[in-house]
Each structure stands twice: as structure tokens, then as C-alpha cells.
Length: 295
Length: 295
Image (cartoon, rainbow over all chains, first blue to last red):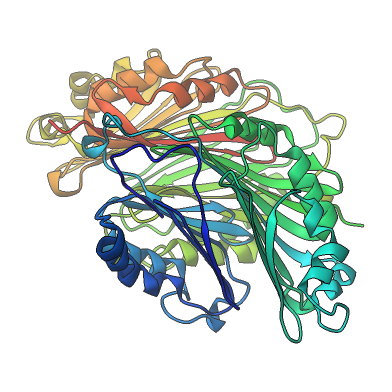
């Protein structure tokens, strides 16, 4: 979620990072990123959060909002309002009249849900004087059906602590020079948050159990090509299937990397099954879904 | 629906056209197009239809399938399995293991549903010898909130018969030289089907009642630019909102028109609110949604 501010907010943002068992929270001057897993109910914190943003920082307007998730393997195990995307949309619609809900990929197979703001033409406007458009981008890779041998690294049986798991898996080499805050849970499970001095972050969450293995990777590092990072992530985790999503605004160096992804109908041993592009008010989005060639 | 055939089927197809009150049916050598409106249940005819195709034409394999519709204004007035896209998908999934369901546009605003075949990588294959890839494309424009003065043309009060309505509205000038089969219903409502000698068709269905006015336009005419046809359709009907979808395969002259649509963030008095692109096995698809600038 990004709040509106009318004074120049500088090119770099500093992040405050709060990590918990099933969640990570990144807070910067105008932004708020919350990542959760399991059966948490992140949308229920939205209203209190908006109140806090007003009380403590004076923000009364949300400039942008991105709520997204992959389809659940077992939606029935979730708690209301997260049992169906329609439920989540209904809740969000009560808070954001300009909210638009999308589903990318095949609704009956693997897909990815997104709720964002897409105001009516009448309300859209040019940036006011003093507002600066900063480069902004997000790369997200959501992986399932992961290599069990790699997943076993993220258990207390195989590693003593998070530092060992981070090193052994090669996570520390995906994007070098990050200040890393990592956790290895009992008996298994792993989370890491990394930040750089110039306002970039990376966050990885791992559910290693073979029956429902899942790894999420996200970064906002700017790059004119994400090919190398994508390859490193795939080499590190070796998933059976994965989705890639890239958001980039008009001034982002990443803007053209989406075109690159269009031509990647194959990445190593993974073949693309779906690719979709969307244009929103401030951002372009590309979504692609890949799965391993049958062996 | 297109059936698989292994002998060259020639460049041009001849269509057999059957028109009814709430439906049009186009049948050619390998294809079957069914357009319905109101509270018909087109998916319930699928299984009998597949049987007939096998019994009368020997077709045992469906090469491609496209089931699509706009979101309903009043889904509660529909009959099962058409009350929810999930219902429709569940039915289609029982018939097509390779079926993939998509939703383009904003799920909570205006959107367009599609079910098509998108086989797993293992089953996709290069065309066998003797199979010819014909150019194929479809332009569809679905319009709502139409100009009431124009809609009144499609009533028995204002026009004596279909021919008069076709001329008065300018429908005969959208794509000239069509052999037209048109209907004006009692007390209102209009349908037309047009075919050319070289295998092109155009079909228009109109619900003129102001509370739920709706016009659908579809054609498979090949063109390197659909700009002129889109403009003619908009001039003819003056909708408040509309979606444009273009399907084109790799050998279609229409292939680049989708790129053209990407740059059309405004068409006359209509502003684009959504634009999405998808790539499927044989087809590229572009979807865009426009609405009138507030007056």
C-alpha cells in the first residue's frame, strides 16, 4: 500500500522491517508491505492500519494498493474472508470505491489474484506539482512442487539455524550485499527479509513440507533484465511449477523486462503455459506461469 | 468450436446459417458457432452436439473451443449452469480435460469470461503433415448503456420490418457486400447474420430496452487494422461502455492489429479503462474495455 504525499519523497526509501513467525512487515515513509502465510487474515488489519497511518503519519489518502495471492491449494482450510477471492473483493470494495479485482492465469488450474486501484477516467489526473514519480518495480516468483532435497535444508533436522540454511541453500547469493534477517522455524519452515542501503528489499518465505511445499520470492530491485535473478531463484529452489509477476511503472528501468518475458516461452526445463499482460493507471503488469517438462 | 481434420480444408469455408429468435448458428466444414442471448442454456447442447458431429461428420476430436461471454447484469435471472462462471467451468471441465478458464477485465466491475483449450506441454505438438494452418481471427464488440434514440430503431413501433431497421441504423454499411438475414422481433429486439462468398461472417444481436440495452457485434473478416470497423460500429450504436476482443492466430493478417489496440487508450469519446493480452496455444487475444468520458 502506498500513501499519497505532496512533498518530494526522495529517490531512496528507508525501510523499517518487522519480522514475525507467519508474517513480514516492511514500513517506509509512504509504503507499507505486509506478507503473510498460513491461515492469517491480512485483510482484517486493513481498517486499523488505515487509522494508524492517519493518526501517526497524517496520511488520509491511499495512492496505490496491491493485494495479491496465488490460488490456494486448500481454500477450505482458510478463514473468512480468505476462503474465496469473491469474499476478499467484497471486503476490499467496502474500503476502496475505485478498487478493481483481477484474476490472471487459468481460474480452473493455476492462477493469481490481484486487487488494485484503477480509478474512473474522471478521477484520474496528472501528477500535481511537487509530486515526484519514482521508479518502482516488483518481481515476484511463487513456486510450488519443490525439490524435496532442497526443501529438507529448511528443517531443524538438517540445519542448526537460519544462517546455516541461508548459506547452504544459496539464498545469500541470489542478490548479494543484502542485510539479512532470517528465521528457521521448529520443526521446519523458513523466512528471510533482506534490505540494501539504497531502499531495495528481498523477501523469501518457505513452507518445505512435501505435500504442500511452497516458496515465495519478492524483490523491488531495479533491473533492465530479470533473467539472471529468475534463473538464480529457479536454480536455488528447483520448483515443479511457478508464476512470475512483474509490476513496473513508466519510469522504471524494468519497464522493458516484461517484453523480455514475452519471448521466454521456455526457461531451462520449464515451459510456459500462460502469459498475460495488463496495463493499469500507473503500472504495467506481466504474469506468466511455467511448469516443468514431463520427465 | 473447431473440429480436427487431417485433410486440407481449403482457404475458404462455406457457412450454413440457421437463425432463430434467441440464437444464431453458423455451421461450416469444421466449425460450429452458436450465439445465444436471453436465458438460453447453450452449454447444455454441447454433449448432444459432440455426438452429432461424430455421427454425421465423423469428427471425434475437438481442435479448439471458445466459450465466452460478458459478465451478466443480473446473473440471478439466469438458469443453471449459467448463474456463475464457476458453474459453467465445472460443466466444461467434465468434457475437456485440457480446458482453461480465464477472466479478463475487472471481476468486480466489467469483465469478460473465456473458456478455451490450452493443453499441457506434453500433449502439444507440431501440426501433422497435411494439416494446414488457415488464417483465423475474430473481432467482437460487446456494448451496453446504448443511445436510446438509436435503440428505438429496433422496435416495431419505429420500423415496419428488419430490412428497414438494418438500413435506418446503418448496419448495412458497417461491412458492405454481405448477404444479410435479419429479424425484427415483436415488440422489439433485432438480430442479423451476414455472410460473404469468401467465408466471412458478421453477426449482430440487439436488446434495445433502455434498462438493460445490449448490442453484440462479431465478425471474422481479416484485416490488418480493425480501427475503421470499430469506429463504424461505435458510430452506429453509440454505447456508454463496450469491450473489444480480438483473437488472431499466427498466420492471420489481423495479428498486428492487437498492437494497434494497445496504443488506443482513447477512441473518440471513449476512454480505455482496461487492456489485457493473453497468448494461447494457437491464438493471441487482446481484451480492452472502454467507457464514455463523463459529459
